[in-house]
Length: 504
Image (cartoon, rainbow, N blue to C red; front, side):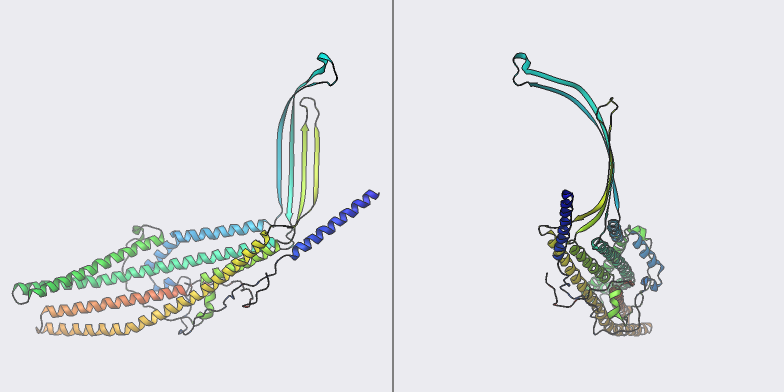
């Protein structure tokens, strides 16, 4: 009776000791420290004109009403290697969420074991104190065999009393949502690059038509000068000048043809196909660029840029990693159940056997009493990752503001240049019209009219280049405004204040 009481007292003391150790270890968990950076809640787009233009639509390129462009974008979205990589990363992040959720469920592991034993025993020795040959003896019981088999099952269930595994699940969900936003970022970048390259090809085709016309005019001019030089009417140096001018126009044609070919190669690379798979593309007039900016670009951009959304989810995932690292200081409590059955035939052929059945169920508590600094290092690493995520988020916000400001400023600059380019074009067109009138009256020869025509071609090319630059800047602004992306369920930013770090 006294032994039983002593046992109960010892057991009770052990329980109290375990509880005290658990509380002591939990008390060592570090306090929550806010990030070293304050996340921005507004994009600093200041001093820029706004209007009611609205945000880009998800399929914004369809507003150009170009079936050829729509087909190329669809082809790129299906076969782009960049999209395949982004999709693979997103699927991997989803599987990581499933793996984290599975850790919350009970698990059962089975054991099945069988074996055969073989014995051949021979024992030799000497009997102490015996005389003569009686000192030695030998025992040889003979050969024997035995069979044994065991089957068992171990069931465990981590109760996750402190929510450590739930924090891991939430961190995995944050990473998956970040991968989803990164996939959208890859899609918007691909769409922008495809459309921009396509319209650059269209611009090269329009400029090629002008350059070929200018080359033909230069060839006619050169023939006229050659006739006059051979007739002794002009100085031979004028023929050299005409030849140089013809060579320059032909060089322009060759450069534009090469640039157009490079655009086709780039389009094929973006789509992940060969250039012949693009089909025969038909030139068409360039669309009119739009220089307007949405009126709520400053605040709405946070949900319109996929890179900002991805950075926001990275903050969410990193904050949950901190929760998981803190809760690693708390004891793990699990339920365990063990069932096993063992059967042994110790002597084959004798008909004897031994059966053993085991069963056990109870709770298991694991305490991180001494970790050699591992838990502290894990927490500090999680905190550093959160600081980095916040810094990357702030960088994405500032970069977005810079992209928009640069795009709008570029459009304004090009729009101001367009006024002067149009005036130069109008002056060259008027000069050509006057030359044509004087030519029809026989007051001038074809050289003057061809000169006026080539001057007008130069102004046509300048207008096309400016329109192409404005269109490219417009497409860049559409991309800077999110390219049609919109996130409705971004996580809240952690409430922090600068310079209020709690002690580590």
